[in-house]
Image (cartoon, helix red, strand yellow):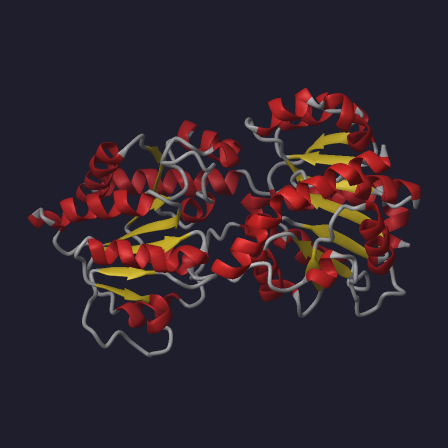
Length: 433
């Protein structure tokens, strides 16, 4: 079975290599970290076992923050290592963890690579954020008696039927997982159906609720006000957008600005992927709207060009600041079937939050927000226009939605400590030894 898995990996790498080459040349991705991806990982204290936390991309990296902070507080002498798969995930991990943790790319799951990587990382326990269970990782960890836990576990509606079709192939992999800390009872049942022993599966809630900032000022917000020269005008933020959504948002925005009641409205667009910044800039130009790139404003103390109608958020790590200034928020990657961006962040900040119907990556959060009246779901451009008009025209209506959203996020917090308690209870020797 080991050789069959490696053979399939090699076929997949060969098939995907043209895509890697294209993205390397066109988008400057995959240009670094190949040594780490091949298992050449250097820790600061390699002789001391660590807690290895793997998070695929930015969302998982952010979700792990409260867990890592709590580990540092409660076990300050235990090293923590953090890996990520994507370039943006690694950049985010370095930005928030590198001073206290070893940070590196996740190694390929080829047998020879993963065996070498585990030796170099020297983990006492491996925590996989959400789902990231890999066959060779699970096998080598089991062979070396290194416990593996899935933390903040979830299996999406789209992924679950696909896993069920290959359940016989992946059951051995899931059976090697020592503990699953699932976000919801539904996700817990899915892990059990795929081969995780029921006695090893617990429901602890979603860590993302704990990462959400509910109270206090978002750092950098006052500076952003000066940079974009924001006065009493209202600001509509399109956050974490994907292909096709910016054009819809710009069309709706132009329609709103033609009405006297909304002539003060300004727009901030923050695309999810940095490689799309130039593409979105071209869309704004085509719409005939005055705009400025935030990357240029960050170099200045304030906006010297008056009050640009549109701000393109073409930087990483600044979305929360834009949300903090928003009158109303639309969360992207939801009008097209991409699964959604994080709608928890604006809701927690007490913002009237809108999103489209394609939110399968955030099902639990969306269900909680919609059932509690803490957000608005729209289906298309027409409904988006109507909803934004209503939120801007009726402050009491928008305020009720915003307050409900914040309360829902607050009530669902607490998963971090539950997860730590479960890890320490089940793997106390590995963690403290």
